[in-house]
Length: 191
Image (cartoon, rainbow, N blue to C red; front, side, top):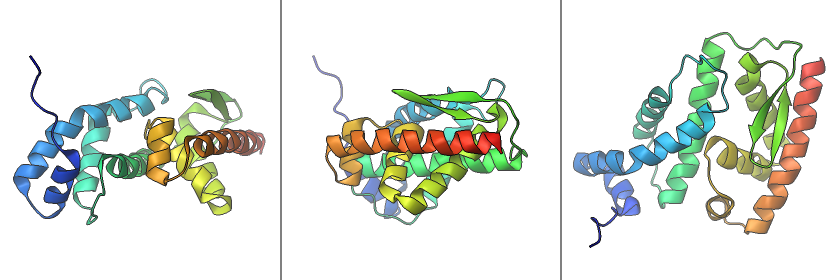
């Protein structure tokens, strides 16, 4: 016997953006677990004792998403945008807590298939955001790949779909972006 059918996320997203509160409630239930998984993915990278908890990150992101007047094409488009929103929530939180100062130590932020060396664990999100913004000025697609994979927890295939490129392009961009960011973050830690 099969369980209940999974809700049509794309349909719910469109109805929610048109103001259908019932669709918004159904969407919240359907997406909550996946948003928590995404938030947990990122929060594992944060220092212990971080004052922003996974549930608070999900709720803040969902509130910001609710205020956006955007027609999401599908589930992948929604989660790509949610990754951007979570990044903004985390960076805003870090900046508001005064974590802009960089220390002299070096602590890695583990990434799937690699790590970035960051100057100070308490400044890691701010340093990564600054470096990612700089990368976006040089190559916006590579910056989006990092954002989707690292902040959004999307797979190579989901990232490829969100960016309308091949999986091979995502893998190549991911590798080059990690090398570029590692160089930038190491340099920032030395200055």
